[in-house]
Amino acid sequence: NSLPPPKALRVCFTPTARVLMLRGLFILTAAPLVAALDLDACPMDRCAAGTPTACPLAPSPGGSLPAEEGTYEKVFFRNDGARPALLLRVDGKGEEHLHVVLAPGARSTVETHQGAVWRARRVDTTSTNGGAATAAPGRLLVEHRVAPVSIDGCACPPISAPDCGRPPFRGYRTTWDPVVFENDSPLPVTMSWFDGDCEESLRIGTSHVLPPFSSVRFIATYGHTFRAHAADNPGVLLRQHTIGDVVIGDCHDERLEVPAGEGAALEEAGAVSEADAATLASMEDEAAALRASNDALRARLEAALDALRTASAPNATAAAAGVVASKELSAALGSLLASPVLATPTKAF
Image (cartoon, rainbow, N blue to C red; front, top):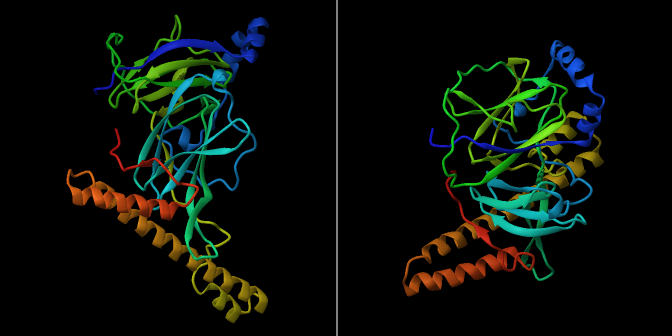
């Protein structure tokens, strides 16, 4: 594997940890007892690469913490949806600010900090009195708060890998993608880096153990996979985490997604009243109109993007195509996205 192993910077003890340590033998006596207990199974997204979750119904209250209160971190967003998405930065008051427009298949790397909140919304179109289409932030697709990777008191399916037996990496690191792990369990844990074939134990301060209720920050690289094992029982995997993309996917608005013909079918079966059937039929028409509008916007954006790519050729025709494409994008996105920075599709690292 070409990735160098990560390097630990420091171990941080939370106020809870300080209280427990002041109480002395609590950790020394409780940890072995807890380790002997059966642990609940972890959710699968804590044991393997993250999987897309359902779209949130509403944004969480509150906003981002000030930058000075959180450590630096990079976050990688990827739009796996079929339509463009707005990537929005949330300020301390909870207000959203456009960061970039992600075309389908596009990725964006943001330099941010722990405690920051980011949201992704789909681009919805509305019609003015004059019939012109304008853009507006639509359905919330993703809300991501930059936070430490939590190690809880649950167990993943057993995974065995040999020890790499390599000397510590001391070379120069060309990328700087930090990640913070927080041990929220009462168990002391060990951290390792998995390179696809073997695991390499990571030093944490002057030892190899991350105490309960403490955290550690590693300088790593996109694609690194970390594993946390119970220190008293290395065969127990508590967490696996890979530094990768926050995936933005499609989701359907439950209020509008009514299968075609469902209203009439229910009315014939006598399952709903005539008024309810009429409401369902109206929702079908509204959903169909929205889908047609979104398809039209997607076609215009795709045509404009093709023209912009063509404009990269050094000739007058291409330059003219680029001007037309820019005007088309502005018309499609409206006043909200008057001058967006459009992220074009890129390959994954």
